[in-house]
Image (cartoon, rainbow, N blue to C red; front, side):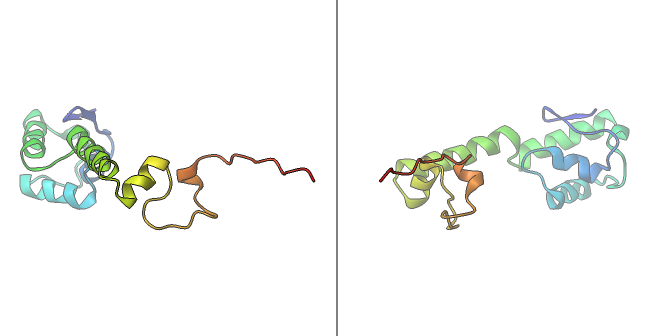
Length: 122
C-alpha cells in the first residue's frame, strides 16, 4: 500500500479513487492533482514509483489543506462558534442539527438513541 502524507491508500483501485481516501480530497481535487503532476488517472495505485509518491506528498503539503490540519481547522471553527454564543454554536454544543432541519422527527443522527420518558399516572 502506498503511503501518502501518513495515509495508506488502497493498492488495487484507480489512482483518482485511491486519492479520495485522504480526508479533504474528493474526486475533483484528486483529478486536479493527477493533472498537475501529469499522471495517468487510470493507473493503479500500487504502480506508483517512489518519485511519484514523493511529488504527490510535496504537492499536497505545499498547496492543499488536508488530513490533520483540515480536521484541526474545522474543530477550531466549531469552537469559535461555540465561544461567541452564536446560534450555530449553541446547536453544536447541545448536539442538535445545525442547518435548520426539523427536530420533532427525523433528527436521530444528531440526537442519538431515543430516551423514553414514562407517562404520568392519573
